[in-house]
Image 1 (cartoon, rainbow, N blue to C red):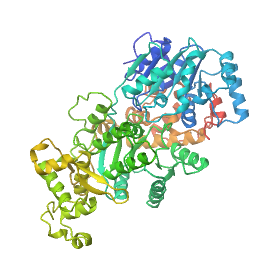
Image 2: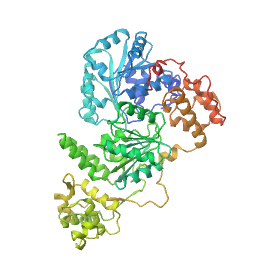
Image 3: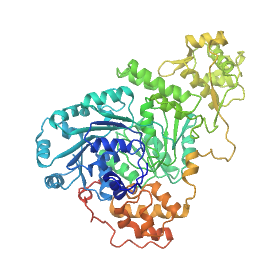
Image 4: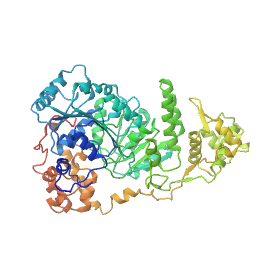
Length: 636
C-alpha cells in the first residue's frame, strides 16, 4: 500500500520521517490501526514481517508512554538502539543496568521524555509492585505491547512461566489496551494467548507463514563438516548461524571453522555469561561472520543480514525449525536454510524426552511432523505453511531443493522399498543402518564377510548407489513408518507391521514416494532462487560494497550494530538507484529524514566513489532526541 496519497495520515508521516518507508507490509496498517484505536489485538507475522513497527509507530501517534514487554535484554537493547538511531526517544529498564543508570531512566520517565519503554515480564509481574505503581503514577500509559507472546502458552515452543503472570495487567491497568505479537503460533497457541492475557474483543490478525525469500534445503547427514563447508563456501564473507544439538559439537565445529579460516565463535549455556555476551556482540557488530550455537542462541538476535542458517541436526519440532531458520533473511533478501538430518536425530530426541519424563503424545506428534518434513518429497514451502494451517497456492516456489530440481523421485519407489525391507529381514533385524547399507550396496566390510551376509540373495540389490543415497532411503522409510530403530547405544533396524505388509504385498502402499539427491555437475553451483536473482538486478556491486564498508565504520564509531545504521535492503536500493542529491536520497527505501540529515552527505560521497574522510561531526553523534539509550550502555 503506497503512502504517497495526500493528505498523509499521522501514521504515514511517521513511517516516512523516522523509518523512510513508503508502503505498509501486509497487515501492518490493520495492526497499527488497532493500537491507535485502543483495541486489544493479536498479531502473528513471520520473522522479518515487520511486527515491531506495528507497536513502535503507533507509540508516536498516541499520547503517553508505550510499554513493551520483551523476554531478553539483548532484544531490548537492539530495538532501543535502532529507535534511538532513528531519532525516537526510547529506553529499557532491566537487570543489566546499574543503579545510576536505572535512576537516569526513572528520572526520564517522571519527566515524560520517553515514548517507548522496554521491560522484562518479571518487572511487570513482580509481586513487589512499587516500581510499577510509581511508573503508572508518574506518566500515563498509552498501551502495552507483549512481544514474543507465544512464550505465554504451554503449547508454544518457548514457554516461559513469568509470561503467564502478565494476565494480571488487565486489572492493574484498566482501560489500557493490550497487544500481543509473535512470529509463530498455531491456532491452539493463539487461543491460549488471548485467554491468558485476557484480551477483550481482540482484533486477531494472522499473516502468511511463508517466507518466500528463504531457500529451504534438506540434506541426509553424511560427512557433516564437508557439507557445512560446502554451504559456507556459497556464502563467503556473509553472516550465518550454525545450530548444533550439543555443546560439545558447538565447540568442535566452531574451532574447526576457525582452522578453515572462517571468523566463527561458539555460543551455548556452558560458556560464562561474559563469554556468551562477548561472542554474541561480536556477531551482531560484524566482527565475526558465523556463530555456532545451541538453541540457547536466537530469540532477540535482530541482525538482519543473516544469509544462511544451518541445522547440523534436527530440531524438536517444525515450530522450532521455522523460528530458528527464520532468523535468516530478516531484511527480506535471499537467504539459505539447510537442515542436515538423519533418523538418528529423532531417535535421540525421543530418548532424551523419555528420560526426562516429557515424551507425551503431543511431543511424539511434534517429532513425527519434523521427521516427515525432513523425509518429504515435495515443495518445502508448501509443507511448512501447511503445518500452520495455511494453504499454499503456488505450484513451484522456486526456492527449495525440490522445486529447484535438486531432488528426483525414484521411478519405482515400491520396488526399492521392498528390496530394503527384505534386506533388513534377511539379516535378522539385528543390525544397524550402516551394516544394512553395506549389504545393499554389495560392500564386503569385515562384519558383512564375517556374518556371511555377502552370500545372501539380497547382497548388492542396490549396487552402484552411494552410501548417502541408501542412508537417505532408510531415513525415508523410517519416516514413512515402514522401519523403526530399536535400542539405545547401538540401534538396530526392524520392520514395522506396515513394513512387513509391504514386503509381502506391493499393493499395500501404492502411493509410496522416495527421493534422492541429484548428483551435482562438477564445479557447478546450485541454482539461485528466483528472489535472489531479482534482488540483485540492477545493483552496482562495487557501490554496494563501498556502502557496506561505510556502514561498518559508522556503526563502530557509534557503538551500535551495523544493521541499526542501514539494512542491506537499503544499501542495495542505494546501489541500484545511485541518488545524486539529498532530495533523491530521501526517497530511497529505508532512508528517513533523520538519517538523510545525519548521514546523507557521507552516503552521497560514497556513491560517487569519493574517498570517505573520517566523518567530522558525526563520530559518536548523540544530538538527536532519545540519546539516553546509548548513554545507558545498550551496547554491553
